[in-house]
Amino acid sequence: MSTIAIVGAGPQLGFAIGAKFAEKGGFNVALVARREAQLEAMADRLRSAGVSAAAFAADVTDRPSLAKALAGAEEYFGSVDVLEYSPAPTLSDLADRPLVSAADLTVEAVLPALETNFFGAITAVRQVLPGMIGRGAGTIIGTSGAGSGPMVVPQVANANAANAAMRNWLLALNESLTDRGVHVAHVALGAQIGSGRPNSEPDVIADLYWKAHVERDVPEIFHYDLPEEFEFQLADKFRTD
Figure 1 (tube, one colour):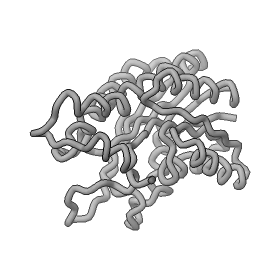
Figure 2 (figure 1 turned 45 degrees about the vertical axis):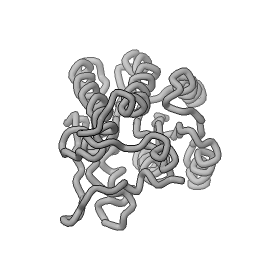
Figure 3 (figure 1 turned 180 degrees about the horizontal axis):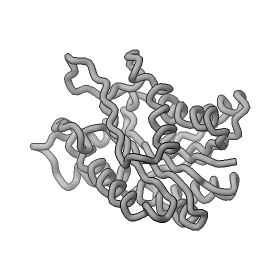
Figure 4 (figure 1 turned 180 degrees about the vertical axis):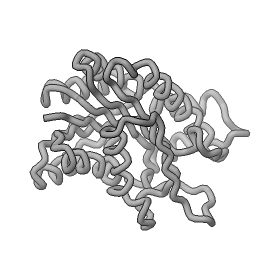
């Protein structure tokens, strides 16, 4: 049985992705994030639906802890066959480290975002990639807001700069692994997840991840579902406090 590890797993999209892979492919689900109680609650929900699921608490900015959590998932389930990386700051995180506009960007403002969105992604991939290459099969998917490339959102320059670094690396990584059985994809979300719009519901968006894993035909998916009157505001994925 294959296993998906979801790093930055939250109760909306992360949970929906795990449930989707379990439903469509019978996957085990490894949930990785900071909040152990929330992770255990999500794992319990999955287990109550007959899914083999386990929680592995780690902060993505603590690189040794993140690597240890994913190593624990590999040991527990035997392998990690799909890695999905999508950590997001909470409102309390943003209070401590505010979003910064392009005109106000500083090195100090972008470093925490790089630690979360880029350095954490490298750490996670480095942990599971050798096993995937050894098996000649695997899928890696990184998620960010569409401001990482397809859209220009100057109000969140620190997050977008870090996400753009992750995006660029993932696209290059996919190109370098095409003949080794590992597919890498970036999902750019221009949507307010859980806002009530049908195409912004977590279960609908989770279908994109399953399609990316199964079809393995494109290195990037841009999902746009914002209202015409859209003006920048925090997506619901940030509101997990």
